[in-house]
Length: 355
Ligand SMILES: NC(=O)c1ccc[n+]([C@@H]2O[C@H](COP(=O)([O-])OP(=O)(O)OC[C@H]3O[C@@H](n4cnc5c(N)ncnc54)[C@H](O)[C@@H]3O)[C@@H](O)[C@H]2O)c1
View (cartoon, rainbow, N blue to C red):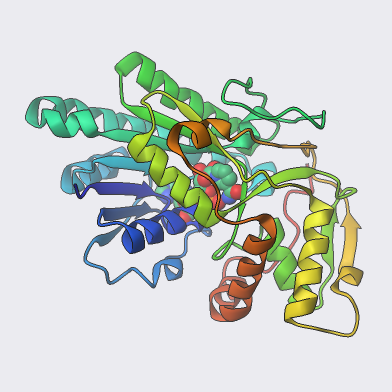
């Protein structure tokens, strides 16, 4: 059955991958609701913008009246909530936007969804029974892992370290409370670090690719030994669509790629692949410079994704090496996309150093 998906933050990095996946590989309709902050980029959706199953609405999730209008006009079956302020370093420079969008915005969206769904229960009970509110979150809510063997599971206690992860933790708690208290049919996913095409160049992997191509220093925070678990964005998008449709109401699913890497290892691999793709006399590794660490920098994140694999049959398609190669090839073939970003809202400067 064809459904209408309301995707918040669909012009962002992961949201746009979800929108492209839904339009290109399913028959569902998509309403992309996005405020278009510095991180929102409609050029990431150029390949689907003329599809009759795709609609864009520019709106702020903190605007209650606008949210009510979107629900009543588009009558979604499934909400996938990705809109957020998402960069830890920016949350150190200015937490206010994170509190506003990630906490107040999620609350506002939950209330709009609850009022729409409550009305559906009388006007269209079948549609109400199929309705889902899927909140997309991060593994950063779990804080830091110091040992080498332990992993974040769905029952790990929350211990966020940054204003970003604290605001996401808060929104996760609200979503679960709306399920327990009001029976709103919600789902939560917590995912590890994503990488892939259309990634805003303030984040580690695209920043390193673009700096290396420009012959600029590759700034590695602290000793570079922080460990992240990397997942190719299109694998994440497929997992999210699966959970939204087949996940158990009220449940949480952790999503990860089984790709634990130290940041310095990521940068080394990236330099070596670039040497193959764009050979130059001196190794790109010579551009690596160690800079002052991020305040409150978590040492290690690692996800146990066995629940989603076991219960929903999801597995990532890409390994870190294949995904990284695809990503680098995409940046090499899509200079217009990132050059316009660089000429606009972000020129590559250090963020979040001044706490
Ligand atoms: N990037 C990652 O590695 C990662 C990992 C796990 C979870 N997540 C979560 O996934 C979601 C998407 O992350 P991303 O990396 O695509 O983020 P992003 O910053 O690339 O995109 C966020 C999008 O939300 C929009 N937005 C921001 N504030 C808004 C508001 N008030 N109203 C409407 N739209 C607004 C922006 O315009 C942008 O298009 C976030 O909730 C993030 O916490 C991200």
